[in-house]
Length: 77
Image (cartoon, rainbow, N blue to C red; front, side, top):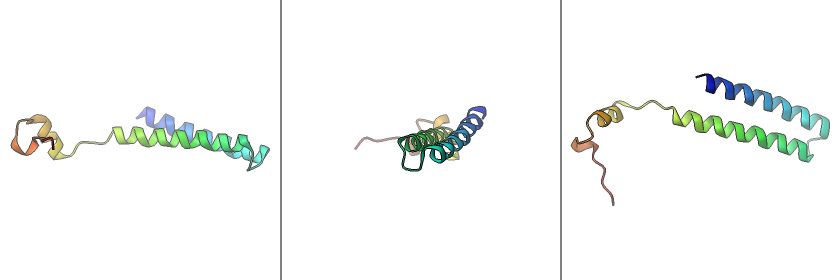
């Protein structure tokens, strides 16, 4: 979970940097846009990491333990 906490800290730091860049350079400046883009990239990475850490449901665990069970078979179309 430290990776998750770390990325959220980075997001907060990037958010502050974006606000500062916009305050100093103006909201229509390339620096302001780049800072918000960097924040958006971090947020997307955090979302991607969260998706990769989802717990399996009971059925998925059952199929992991019983891959030959009829209800766990996968068929190609």
